[in-house]
Picture 1 (cartoon, rainbow, N blue to C red):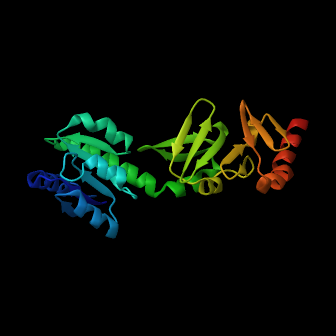
Picture 2: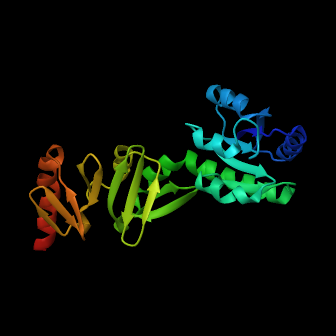
Amino acid sequence: MKCIVIDDEPLAIEGMKMNIEKIDFLELIGTFTNALDANTFLQKNEVDLMFIDIEMPDITGLEFIANLPKKPLTIMATAYSQYAMEGFDLGVVDYITKPIVFARFLKAVNRAKEAFELEKGQSFLLQQNQTNDYFYVRSNWKHVKIKYDDVKYIKGLKDYVIIYLEKEHIMTAVNLKTLLLQLPSSNFFRINKSFIVNINFIDSVYQDLIMVGEEELVLSSVYKDDFYENCVTKLIKCYLK
């Protein structure tokens, strides 16, 4: 994994370099004493993992992470433990406090490696698991296993979706069109530009309205013919059995 270190303290950078050199799957490709130089580097280079301090001049580590359009996996390394929750809200992999104990560093980078490998192979996992009864999505900094049969409907929000299950909902960074390709076409239908529905949870269909429990979903004209031709036919056959 290609990694960089961002810290305004040169001694802290040296200490991090020593730890990184002990890990065979890490390759240090850059160190920076300010976030602005790091930002320029990130725009021109592929980085898998970023170690970053919080308290820095010009812009804090948290502000830097929040404003990155494309975020590498991130481990925060700082003396200020009060920022941990804010970091996790931004999707960081882990949070280690200074002075850094190597055992704790090892735990953090192993967690990053696992997330990296899962993320790298996520689409493959989704495609492979179509023959099974589940799929994986990444939510926050962990991968969550979801059974197809538990999905009621899915709502799209630009580059994110919210997957509604019977007892909870899960948000993940993928667009609706991409996710639809991974779902079994026999059960999942797109009904408008923002929603996919599992026909097994449809309680009623009346003209342009689809009821899933107490949720009223709108069937758009773009998908109406296909829905009635395929989905409603399947529902009728199921009810007649």
